Image (cartoon, rainbow, N blue to C red; front, side):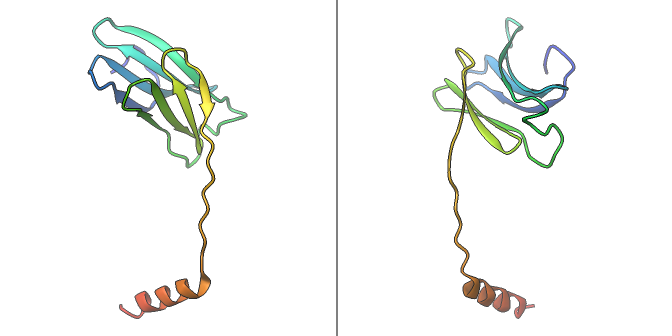
Length: 118
């Protein structure tokens, strides 16, 4: 699928079917590449962290997603989401806050009702 033999973490095909984007894992970092399929032109778009920043093994999934306009790639690497501009390889972290409120009594009731249904 690619021009070299490298471990692939994820791949995405552009909506026009002309370019394959992939996330590869080297000894030093994750890298995002583009491959123009008809021309067989390979280009490194961005590097995402090194061993000190990214756990290259770990339990975290690695994933790529293209935006609908085809201008950005979103990469999930080592539990962090990055937004990558395809044209110049500029990488920005995607910042977000996620909270979940747990109400202990409600959860106890749910647990008791589900465990009682066995």
